[in-house]
Image (cartoon, rainbow, N blue to C red; front, top):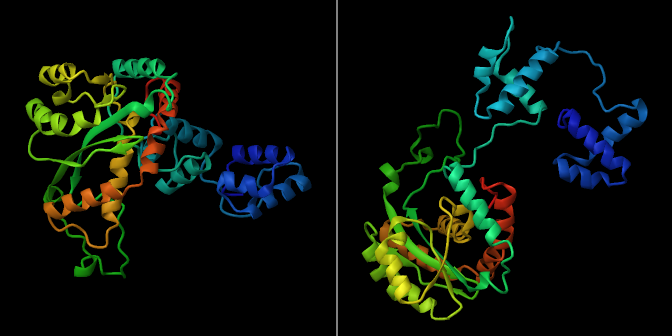
Length: 336
C-alpha cells in the first residue's frame, strides 16, 4: 500500500466500514480501485492495515529520524531535502532521495508554490472587514449591478517553465529543440476592460505609462461612463494610484458614479482576474502565435469578444463564495 499513508489507510477503512463504495474511495485518494480492494482484503485477514513484514533492504531511518524530517518540513515548507540531510542529528548516511521518500510517506510532496500578494496584518484586517460587510450581498440584488474593471499586461512571448519539448538523448541544443526567446519576453501590451453579468466593455489598449489624467480622459470618460448610465450601476476598481488620485475621485463624484470600496492587495477577490487568465490561455492556444505587438493586440481583442457571456456570469456569481472564503481565511489568501 505504498501509495497510501497510514493515516489515509485508516480513513479509507473507516469509509469502507461506513458503506461507501470502493470506487468512490479510490477517486477521493487518487488511487486505483484495486488498491482499496487489497486494503479491505488485508484488513479482513489480519485485522490491520499496516504493511506485512517482508524481506528487503533495512530501513535507513529510525522512527525518530522520520519524526524529525516530518516536523522540520511542516514548520518550514520551503526547506530542501538536502538541508534536512545536513541538519539530521546523530551519525547517519542518508541521501536526499531518502528524505523525499519519508516526506512522501507523510503526504508532503514538492509542488510549485502559489504566488500571492504580500499581505500585512492591516491588509488582512481590511480584507476580513470588507468580506463581512458584503456577506449579505446577493447576485440578484447587488453583484449583478457591479462593473468589475482592471488593467492587465500581456507579454508577446511568455515562459512560465511549464513548456516541454520531446527530444532524444544529446538533442538538448539541437536547433529544433531550443526554445528561443527575446530578452524580457519581447515586450507586450497593456489593456483595460470591464465586465458585468449583462455584458462587457470594449478592450482598450493602454499605451505608455498610465496617469490619473490619462485614466480619466482615455478610459473613464469614453468607455466607463457609458456603461454606468444605469442609476443602479456600481463601479469597481482596485487601489492603483491613477484610480485613487484626487482627479479621478473628483471626476467620478461629479458624474455621480457609485464606486465599490475595494480592499488593497486583493486581486483574488476580483473575478476579472480569472478572465485575464482565460484570455491569455486563448491567445496561447491559437495556431499562429502573434509575431508582433499589433498581432498580439488583435488576437486579444478577437478572443475577448468570443468569450461566452455565460462564463463571465459564472465568475461574478462566485462573489458570495469569495466573501465567505476571505472571512474564513481571516483575510489571508483564498483559492480564488
